[in-house]
Amino acid sequence: QLQLQESGPGLVKPSETLSLTCTVSGGSISSYNHYWAWIRQPPGEGVEWIGSVYYNGDTYYKPSLKNRVTISVDTSRNQFSLKLNSVSAADTAVYYCARYRAIWDYSDIWGQGTLVTVSS
Amino acid sequence: QSVLTQPPSVSAAPGQQVTISCSGSNSNIGSKYVSWYQQLPGTAPKLLIYEDNKRPSGIPDRFSGSKSGTSASLGITGLQTGDEADYFCGTWDTSLRAFVFGTGTKVTVL
Image 1 (tube, chains in turn red, orange):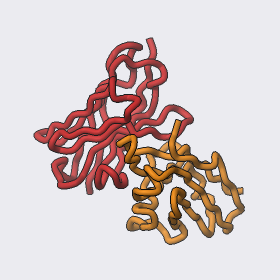
Image 2 (spheres, one colour):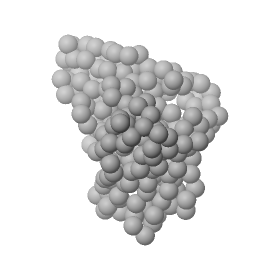
Image 3 (cartoon, one colour):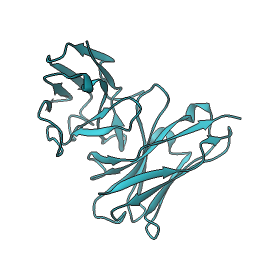
Image 4 (cartoon, one colour):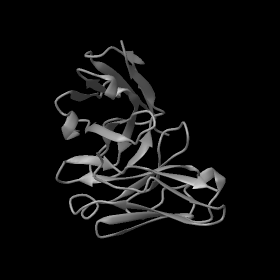
């Protein structure tokens, strides 16, 4: 069955760029009407949708993060990526990648998550 | 600050039932499907209910979803110790053009 796996540095310095990649296995990232999302969860807090991308490159971002976020897709590698600029301690969180059945619908598959700590 | 409000916690004895509310507005719950997620300690969230009241394969019928106007609810009957987890609602917000999650509710089995 389809699985998602996050990868990237677990420690990022303040003001630098957080970069993560999600590898999709057991299925195609180019599947019709599926969107691919990044979601994060600060320690002890709730979950926050960061944004989503379609296989053709169309993107949607959370308005409050839009100026710092870029989500891109690489169909040849069956991967999608997150870049978050100018990070601070407030960006410390477990970052999940997930599949959405449609941009406005539900998320049915999640990765296991990866903890990213912002600290000097 | 989330646009979907949930109670911070609910609790009940084993075998009893709990209901978790999710309050929103016309731009989200009032016009779009609601989904519910269960997050067991130390794990990723898992889809529990989708499109207001549908259960994915493998989710027991002890879990149910409903919606009325700008509020949605998740019901859990026959509460088990394994149900102790955080539960989140989620939906698309047409004004924000963003997916929004609820504040989350911790379920405790007494």
